[in-house]
Length: 262
Ligand code: MF3
Ligand code: CO
Ligand code: CO
Image 1 (cartoon, rainbow, N blue to C red):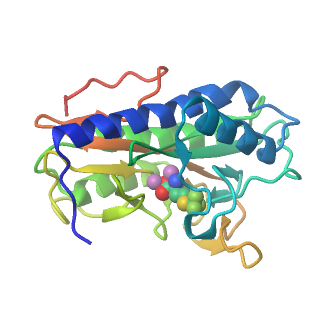
Image 2: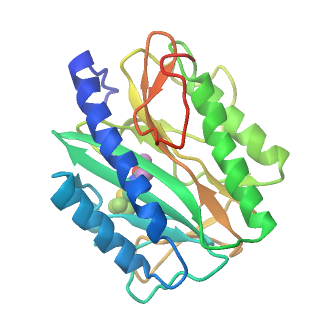
């Protein structure tokens, strides 16, 4: 599959989808408290996406995924399946990953939530992982190599003695959920594809407190955990490359990216 370059009209539609995905994360925040189940979080998001936003939750039935969002708690790296029997407890950390389809285009974004008071080491993992994403976003612009993005993420994570998950990556996005190119979260500067204006893709680093190694559940075929059962964190945005830098299409109100400045 080739990399697609979006027209300004297509970027406008991507911006609409991205805003809705971000808005789901803003909406669900107050519900992420001890005692709620991840199944209930899924129902709230599903109903909001379908009934309020008049949009489509992209994960539902995607390659057989059974729910509308991904909920990945503690040592779950990604693709956690919401479950009425999975009750959040004080001290948990959870990634909620939202992808919506609106007017034929996808918006894909995730963030970490703390359930009540969490351990300092858990908060630090969350913060360093967020900074990995933000440092990569700050680099994005025409002519930048994909390897430059992976390298800055890897350097920051490893400077804190964390590891970068290699088995899952970011991706091009548009009319199709997962388009080319693959966006690795590790690598060498000046290697890989060069970015061009009009490219839209995600950056979604998964950073482990322990080793980088992953294990896919044999029971459900989706849930990815750390082999050493230590914590993992992830943050994700959908971006569009502009003439001068990038636009964060899934920016939340709590964030403050400069638009079009690389
Ligand atoms: N939202 C995930 C991503 O960032 C993909 C989830 S696919 C699903 O690419 F099937 F697990 F929902
Ligand atoms: Co993604
Ligand atoms: Co996602």
